[in-house]
Amino acid sequence: MERVSSARAVRKTELSRKRKSLEQIPPDQLDMGMRLCSRNARRFLKDAELLFSCRSYGHALGLSVLALEEQGRKAMLQAVKKGATELNRELWRMMFRDHGQKLAMSFNIFTQTLKVKPPQEELERIYRSIPDAVAMKNRGLYVDFFKNSWHSPFDADVNRAAKKLVPWVKMVIQKTDRWLRF
Image (cartoon, rainbow, N blue to C red; front, side, top):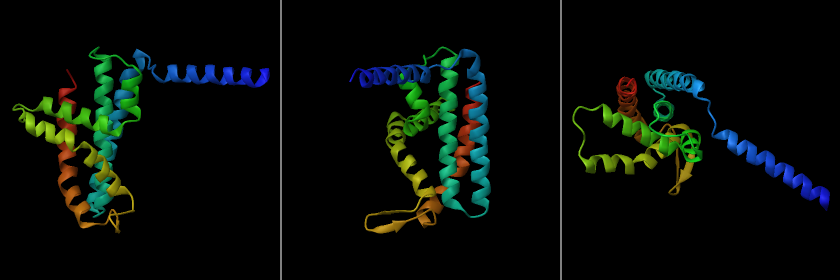
């Protein structure tokens, strides 16, 4: 019995150590993380544009939303570097696990780049639509069965969404990159 409890204590200590290390990004690694996020966001967008040109609208849509998520992660890292926020467990979760939060950060940063701010009600509508963006990303990437029928990346609504979203994401990334240079 003592061995089992000792083994549990060791595992619990190791898990605690791992959890603590999750929150640690050395300050000298923040620039590298931002460069990698930027590179990855642009790669997702480039791939989305290529897929879009080949009429693979669903996957283009999915990759464009991934580009926005990566841009949101870059913005969070920039905020940590500039001292606007501290890296804690919640921010770590937002950066590396919560796709909706990364999208919200991208939209928030994007609105900061605008000379004329959208009305508050429009911003609230955008933030309420973030779960829809995550769902649309999934619609663009996966086959699913819901509401008693099949849905796939080949559906017409996915094509229409990609035609609007891919160019918009490109603009968002360009504008937020300019704003993030502060």
